[in-house]
Length: 351
Image (cartoon, rainbow, N blue to C red; front, side, top):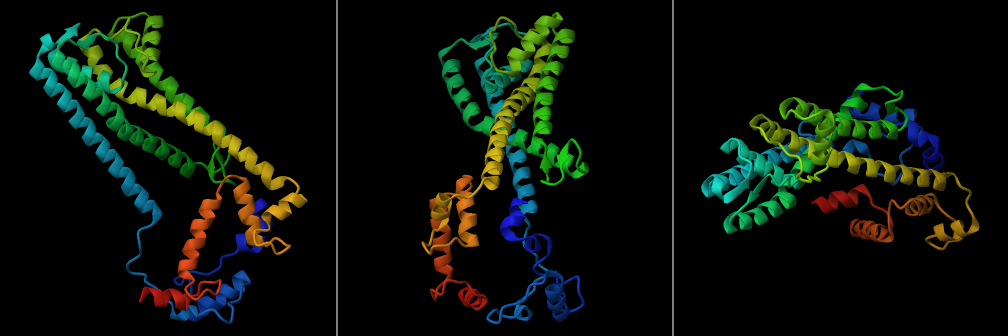
């Protein structure tokens, strides 16, 4: 409703220009576009018949670029993870078990387990460096894992959660899951998904600890929560080969997923506050002070463009520096200083 009040219902519900493939000729396209939209071309505007229509080589869309970027993030995250673990296992092998103190099970499993626990910054204390070389290497290993690998893996987890949300949006048609009018998931649904991820990770760990490590249910739940939240008191840890093999996968996925879920809860709360503020701004009464503040050109009245800019600034969507950057770009395109950008000017600049 607020957008209709600003732009008018005709601009929101009717297309400005029809697709050239939907009509038999360019002339009929222009005529049909005028009839359907109720808009007329200004006498100073160049004819659309002279516009080159490139239909064979269409530029990549935004969805295509996003998909390529997301797949690149996943690929890089996987490659860095493999390289990180291999380097840690190699150093663990070269230094030997004597360079590390703690409970030993299987050499290869202990090496991978130590790398994953270090990467997730849990620090159970069941395997610790015992020599100067391994201590120095662990310092570098932790910093690299925390500063680089975690960032890539967090991006991968975020991408997977975004895919899950996109799948829900594509499959649902309104109702309790999706707000069809706004085209997004409801806040309660997002919070429910985040809480579900936390419960799933903790529950899976508790069940596995109960059956693999032979702990009672309370200790299993206790160790699971302390693990996914990266607290790691050290009073409980994985002691068996199968338990450490399971932990090498479960810890990597759960710690990042739970951390991202809690971050998502905070983002949802902030986003909800922003939406309430925007709703209040768009529905409150306009005062004389608002009129004076929105009159950017000091003409004594407020145009539609000035009103839009004022409301966007009030909602915190843009700042003065953003407006200045846009104005500078407009001035570069408006080479004749006429206050408008025309098609002949753009075509001349391309040459």
